[in-house]
Image 1 (cartoon, rainbow, N blue to C red):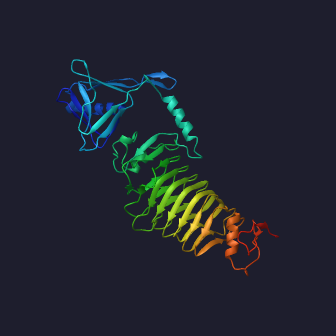
Image 2: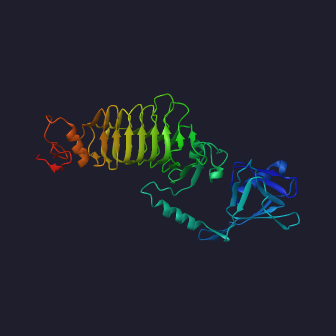
Image 3: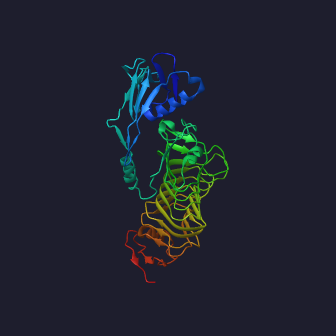
Length: 424
């Protein structure tokens, strides 16, 4: 969002340029002050008088009041025929003419309608806002975003801004990441207000406690060139959610690589990975929630290294080499939602020799893979439905019971029979 100022007419005109449809009183002050500070503009009388934000104690500040000095505010005219509603918020805005008499603060323009929302109180209760933010974020199961908000708009953003509002969003993720304070639980908000957008930047989230939140599957991150993962998570306690992630057109990169601890991947749609959909290396205490992976060249999820406690809930993988490949020292991997590993080219679920304590919940569906399950781990626990289906799909001559950490048998003549403990 930018402004232009015409200092010649009386009253002078401050124009908010299209496509911006809103401006806060504080933004107006900041940008007009920047204009007034330019040497070429110092010969003109000052345009605004601003007051407020005096500290009253207890986190309460006087509200902002701005008086335009022989000036009006205008939103740039639109081509029509639809009228665009615009707004001014965040304080009190008034205007006076050259004699000090009150005048309308808004200069009309074609196909715009401007609503000025004045503060009903003379104070800004920042403490109450902060408390409300903590209350809302406390409802999340983990990765609460209680730090600063940083707005990222790959299409309409500007890296000259500081990302403190959606109208002052930054353009690149690297700029947004620079504004994050490590460990502060800052939230990077991905904007996609005008329909589907595609970001062509490969990103690295390397600061602890960063929360990256997208608006949904219409926000697509697809790097324009190969050589790095689409998303690399190296910071600890990072959360990424709300977007589609695709691989570059060429190369052999993973879509998402995770090496940071306590990660969270949520509401993510992964397609077209040139290698694995998600690659996790020695990253413990991680979680997948509502992650869908389709048609990677490699595996859907490939976990290697030493990894303790991985939680999966509502993860689906299809058309991969192996759906879920627990290839490292994977301890305490839990699949407790409605997982589905279907129609994968090699294996639906592969549990390696160094894995222990894997839980495959009863609502997990593993079907129509070349091999549904390869289990070389120890102390694997299968939910009743998974175990029953696994037994019934195996040849009768192979065995009459399943033994291990969960030893159960089923009447092979009736797929709907109840499971009962088997003699060990």
